[in-house]
Image (cartoon, rainbow, N blue to C red; front, side):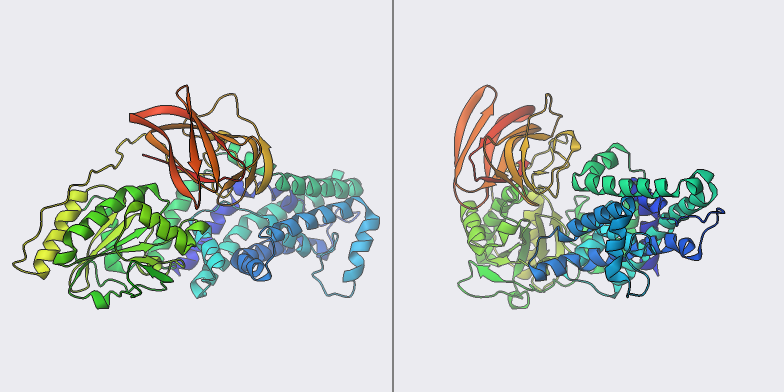
Length: 563
């Protein structure tokens, strides 16, 4: 019941948020045509209900199963959206040109209602709208989308999806019914039915073009989303229902304590077993298990090799492994990829070699062990005692001295009378500047730091630097080809970045050259091989700065990270 209520409220919030603006005109105009005396035929009275039913049905189905279906058919991931846009244009043209409407209707004359003809029940219009409906991805919708894209669709997900769709349908139906009553009661609509149909068709075509060109995104960004805080509250409620893969209760309590800087040993419950590991590195062919490591103190460290935060944390984990291995410490690095290229074992091995990592590494390419621990971030370390109980969780960077002391306590408890070597001496390079620029992803999926808070679609386009760049944003110049995770450099490709940090790194892959200009000087950086982070700017202390980087054609840029 809590899951259903959360889904219902999440849908209601979405239905009254700015996210519905792109489809609202067609929902409002979805009422049937009035009769000569101003009344409405029975079919027209049903039309608003069927428009909304079609919209939420197709939206829910495409959200849950669209990604898996398109992947199985090996067709472009945006095919559903393209078909939806094409259907809107076709239906709009049919409203403008009656002859075309007859041609469209002909194949469906033998089919029972609801039909997809423009002047029919409205269910077909709703189906087309559902294919292009892109509401704000709040926590509730995010849970549904992730479940659908990964194939983890169970009863909980179906309940959440249905309740979300019902909640979203309620305000949309109010708009549709209001539009129907306006059409029925305003005499101007009754006298000019043909004009109304043509106008509706034009609105439909304009909407399809605006959606295709992402014009509606700019409109949505310009209007404050007054529902965000409520949606986040529902997200916290969703976490408490256990609808997704979450950590056991005891472990989740320790994870929450980690965010407060907790440096005490706790009883966090038994350590989950390593699950779904595709391959092991640095083990000589062995496959370690938590049960097989009984009697050892184990540090399970979640990381990704192109994560700058991990690169600052991992030298400490390696130093502990080197210092305390003979006295009973085992470090296991669980590599859970963030990017597609991080799924390649050879790339992970190269990244580990560059960082000097010699402890066992598990390739968790399907996020199975990540899910078993209910983990949510990189880096994250789980300290396990000799009996297999998790005793401490560390999330993010910093407090390495405190973590080492906990390791020493568990080693002494496991081996009373043991003589431990001296503590390690590795510099803590954790940045502590609260104004530091956040990590900036460059793929089309996450463009919130692109200049003007704009976005760019997948595909090739030409960009130009703006006259002025906002703080902690980036801009593009020249030709770039965007995909969900990266930007591929074309002719004259350049990036300009405004930042606040001591150091700036660009995650980039391929073979070519970076030409970096900062502070009036220009230098060249050679790039070769799998994606890796390259330092592009540095200063002795955190400061505001701007750097311009020209990339050779064929280089793929993934993100900026800061230190």
